[in-house]
Length: 281
Image (cartoon, rainbow, N blue to C red; front, side, top):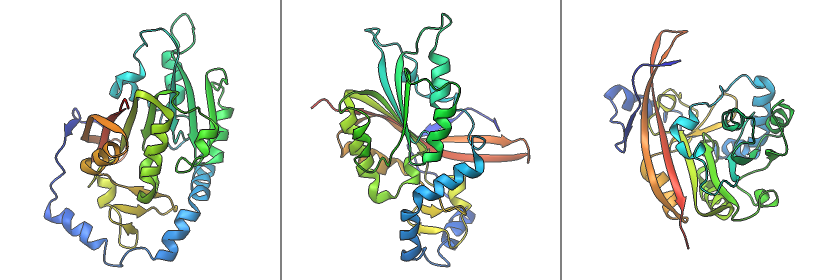
């Protein structure tokens, strides 16, 4: 997929056309997903992601080399020269952490400037990370955990992280647990440390494509494979972080137009991208 034009950053919510409004209204025709099924999706969430990685292995997601362009903090050298700590939540098969490891090892072959932690809900995904030839326990620790619980604190000391990435992760978690995730990250980060966030934005093309019968709640949907997807407004993400110990450095919708070369289709996407700093208390 090739970008057609530069990304547009805005705090304004997309204005829907009559046709798009109709698509959203049509999603309600069969009502919301029944409570029983919605609860089962929550119970089976880990199993559904494990099946996803069993089916797709390492092929589904492309390596995220763009992340260092979007978030310069990932490349900046610390003033002290000391190695910092970065935690990738929802690492999948390592499409972010391995490119960072490669990019940050300089020509002399010295160690990267970060020590990395990476976790995923899916044990199978973590197995793929650990079996990657680039996996080196002296530079990276990968572990399975449910980031909505206290499990993560068994692996990472409180107040030890400089950067945490939350990239296309929160949207797969039930909205009732968003606060638990943010509070966990707050405990893990040093004062002044950063959360780098990117996820699906409200009225993204993927949201408008959902058919009746897939809607669980407002802006929350289930895919065919049983995994879930939530679409965020700028205001709610700002509020989520501000109310739980963070200040906003930036937070905006990213409008991106890409050309699907295979199908020759212009694909307009909307993401939400933010940087949030843990307040000094």
